[in-house]
Image (cartoon, rainbow, N blue to C red; front, side):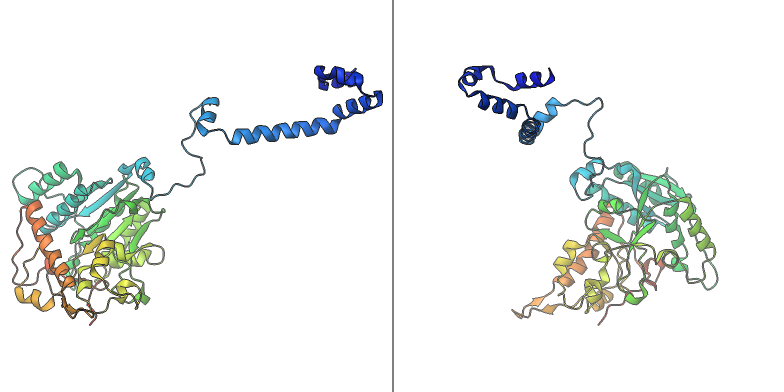
Length: 404
């Protein structure tokens, strides 16, 4: 019965007349072929191949309309790698987990920090903005500090965090950097997954939100390229930090045990020199003093590339003012100090024309800072007849001396 059923199932009723006319032996052979296991398997394989080929050529929206899930389909495969540089990555990122951090110890640096936040606001930076300021600065009132703190909060969305200034004033200790330990309180801002600490004696040239999306690490910093490269010194002018109780306890212990010549930069180098993620200095730590240098190989990273100030400015995102003996940009420099230390003009090798582009850019850095200080802080440049802590040069590690 089983054999008969299989044979009847595969025989086409319309072929009955043909079978009657066929030779009986031929008929039996044809029936055996049609009912054989090989024929059935071959037919099934051909059918499946045709089915899947047809399926693969269907439009994707057709498949989507035909299949339904008991729960929402994932927006992307679980194991798919997301490109941090893609616009979609920026859209799905919870930017409230990140913050730009500034610290303040006096009125001049408060203005600098508010200028930094104004730039971030103007550039539509997505991360939070946090200002650590001395608890003694009043929020209410008509003092310069009060006005700037309220401006930062109301106009630029800055979160204000009162802190105790971390300082060490001891005999033999340079008072210039005695309060620089305050910067390291960024390690204690554990309400954030990551914070970007920037020195405020600087200008932000381009957005830097992409730094928050770097691979996890306790700290990321650029190299102090102006130092001896064999020393591999890290620059604390920019620090991408993952705040944690563990790391902050290490920082506190280092501050308590700091020697007379150890400040914020020395501490982070002692702790993280061999473990920090290194940021490219060509984008994230350009010094204004580089424009005064004759030899740019340390900055460029090679001895063969030609210095082009416009190319440098297009790739730079963070410009730090460091031009000793020229004072910091909120100090009114003496005219002869500027004249004697500004970049020299060069002769164009092809046209013999004088090229002053590097000098013009350098002078423009100071003009721009002064104008923004006036617009944002309503402050003019400070007058100074002697060196103050605001006119400090970059220390070692950190002292910058142009190579002539």
